[in-house]
Image (cartoon, rainbow, N blue to C red; front, top):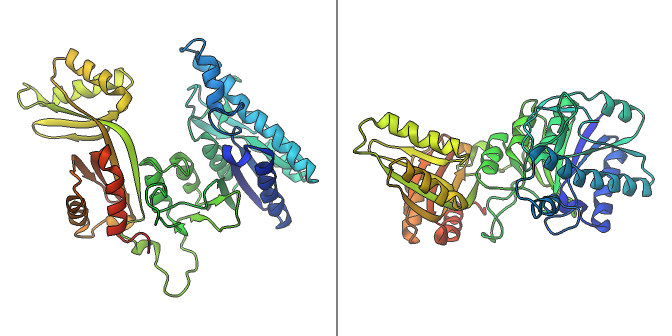
Length: 408
């Protein structure tokens, strides 16, 4: 049995016309000899009547602190509605389909409501229905605990569902359908010349996703990578080939660039960050000061990023909406923090960065020539990050995209 997992996001199932287009993709898979497992997200986005964020707003507008267990019950409804409608759409095309909730599909999670992690998948029920010739629709974004509690998998959870099912079923491929034609070298809303990547490695797309690219959730990439199952990012509304995510290099046309020859694969960005700066030069014990700072952030449930611990200072970022909270906590601990809101992190990702001289020099020169001040920087063997003022974000992304010729 040739199993293909197909995941359709909220915009792909937002109305009857789009659902027909999605169902046509499923029908085409059947005609090619595949046994499809279809993962669906909730219908539409915030403001649409059955979108997840609409459900959340409905409950939290009454009382802001809705228990996470009950919120998961509510949020799971969106995918169930979407799944039933997709079954109906497929049946209208003469295709037999059956809907399974995350729990019915055997997705067992821990009990971390709102951001549950998959412990294992028991795929027997999915396989049974596939062997009966049915198309199996699975509600994305949700699972069930060992004791029967419904959980959700956090933002991007439907991607995670698709990847986990693909691995559990040893699928030939996992197709992630969205409203764009593939993964691009930068956000096309910022860089008009951004190019669709034909092929990208698991590591590069995972890094891009972690750094702000929103086409696929990084956890989904990491799961698919466990068994080297190819991910394909495609558009529901076109026949474009999309982007193949894999560790295996496909046959390339003569003269084509190899994945490994690219210095930079793509550029991602994260806006609305506050840089926190602490002078610890006069602290009696610098290690204890560092420990105190980050323990305080953790206890306040403040996620920190872009951390730089130096001999005389500590630098890190938090989301803008948490900036004032972070500053107040630090002041209560006896520190005198400096906060710079409205910053943006730019990430240049590519396996070719490692051991290539001059990459950082090109970044610094390009940004300086375009009047962009670097507030902070860091690097790894696959990524270089720079922090800039948000007002310079678009200029930074455009100029770096041009400097590294990512439109070629």
